[in-house]
Amino acid sequence: MKIVIFGGGGFIGSAIADRLLLDKHELRIFERPRVAPYRVFAVEEKVEWITGDLMSTHDVSQAIEGMDVVLHLVSSTLPKGSNDDPIFDVQTNLIGTLQILNAMVDKKVGKIVFISSGGTVYGPPEYTPLDELHPTNPLVSYGVTKLAIEKYLLLYQHLHNIKVNILRVTNPYGERQRVETAQGAVGVFLSKALANIPVEIWGDGSVVRDYIYVSDVAEAFARTVKYNGSVSVLNISSGIGVSLNALLDTMEKVIGRKIERNYQASRPFDVPVSVLDNNLALRELEWTPKIELCEGIRKTAIWMGWKE
Image (tube, rainbow, N blue to C red; front, side):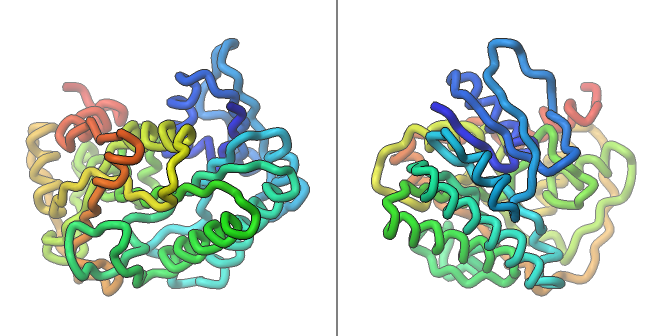
C-alpha cells in the first residue's frame, strides 16, 4: 500500500515507518520544514520524504495525493503545557486535522489511522482498567483536543465513508524519544539517572501509569493499516499499572545503581491511576505487547549510551 505518515520522522512515527517498511509498503513521510530524515534509507526501501505546513491546504493536499492510507501522528502541544494556551492547541491540532480530512475527501483517500491519547482523553477513572466505553472527561486541553479530533474523524466517517481507526496509546517509551521536551517519565527519568542527576517526582510517587514500548506501538499500527473490522476506537497499552516509585525501582535494578529522588508538590491535572484495558485490540488486531518493562528500560538505556 501507499501510506502517508504525518509526523513520520518523530519518536513514534519513525518506529512505525520502520515497521511498515518491513511489510514492503511505499511511504511518504510528511514532516515540518528543516526536519531531516531520521536515518538513511536503503535503495530498496520506498520512502519519499517531504516537508510542509499542516496548516497549508496546498501542502497537505500534495502529501495525500495518490495515497491509500493516511497515518496522523502530529501534535504541536504536550499535555503538561496545553492548558497554558488552549487556543494554540485547537488552532494547530484540530484545524490541521480538518485540513487532512478535507484533503482526503477531495483526493478520495479512504482510510485514516489517528494516534489519540490513552493517557489524557479519559480523565479521572471511574473504574480500572479503563476500556473504550469508559467516560471521557479530560483534565487537560491536550486531551480535550484529541477527543475533539476523534469526534471529527468519526463525523467524516459517517458523512464521507472514510474508514477511521483511532488508537488511544498510553505512555510510549523507547529509542528516539526526545527527553529534552520532558515528555515521558521513562525517557526523562532514565536520562537523568544515567547522568547522575536527581529525578524530580510530582507528588509522592504513587501515581500509576501504563507504559508501552515503542516497537509494540508500531506493531499495532502495522496491523491497523490492514484492519478491515468494524471497531473504530482501540486502546493500545500494556494493561499493567506501574507507580512512579516502582518505575524508578525497576530502573535501579536495570542500571545497577541508586537513583536520587526529589519529591515535589503534586500537579492538579495528574490523575492518580491510568491503566487501560487492551483486550479489544488483542481481539480485533490479534496484537499483544511483547516487550516487558524491564527489557524495555534496558533497551532504552542501551540506546542512550549505557553499557551493560
